Image (cartoon, rainbow, N blue to C red; front, side):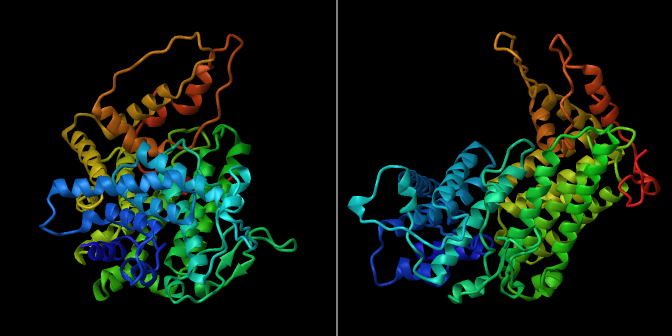
Length: 532
């Protein structure tokens, strides 16, 4: 049964979380030597994460829950007591289980520990010199982190650390992008690792260079210091697209004054730059990427699962950037919904629907993890925000996204949670309980209300009871609460200038109204359109 569980991990998880080498892992678990403690903990992590895929009638649901709880606890205790590559690797795999169950506080806590350990072990850098000390001479002070990790003994071990660092980076990005207020736990400016190589080169123990941004003094700031694209694989490109997505997230979190022509000109230039970065990334992909739909029906789905994950990451990035201009919560005489941005969003959602249909027909949805479910969740919500902005019925394609999420939810509970929320919101809208436009305004008003702060601890506080439908509205629409507006000025008495806030954010409802499809001829994102 343990052999089967490890095999299931490599079939269902390691394709898109490629931190383990299959041959090395099976040799450690089932070879002639006995397991050490670190290997046993890694095995516990794999058990906790892959029990969901095991179809064995000998295990009752109670036994599954028991084994899951025991393995999860074992990994958590080991990770709390040990700062090491082995502990980090096991915790990353357990984090897949947690984030696949719920994108909530428990997963964020686990990610915080992962990110801190990555920093302590200095995995974000390509270290060249390592310190070592005898066990009895190891200090119990701040310098212990400098001797906590020895020199890698092989290319597989060195590349394994690189992949481990990037996987924590990816998990951090997906968890943070799901919110509108959180900051990344791993700073992009500190990520000085080269990209991981293709899995084939990794497993064959072939040392290669990939792509790195560690600059020499005489180089252009945006040019890679090392660039060997022939050694890149799908995981490498996944890391690259999430670096762009990180820039998009930081860009959208920066407050702007949408009534200022100067600020909006800068905003538009940055927007175009990020749009270009997404296009350049797409053009840089190898030729087989353009054939993933055909490959899905001709090759074993497991061989191309990572390419589907890559496409879903691209769709998430496109929607994250362009929805801010297509469906803004903040409007002014120079900042209105963009037809170009709207079409980019709808095209991306359509492409994800086509890909999901291919995977569904090939019975490959069980090979795609929580990041793919998150992209489906983003795409389905885009259809709802489109209906709210344009004032039309929601596209029937949303039913396919909900059904696909339910299917993925058989293995990853977080997808089932997404499906339930979407189904409730769509049902309320179709029954006429509340328009999608009104739902969006309700979510905006509640988020704005709970974001208010006190100037003094003596000011009163209050509690407002919320309903499930109101929380559903926040889950669906708050993701699109962009761009953020600059803080309104305060008057001499300390009160917020509500007139200024209303003019910028439309708290009276003006910015939340449905406006139909924007006019493509007057699109302010056009390259030759001046600000008036």
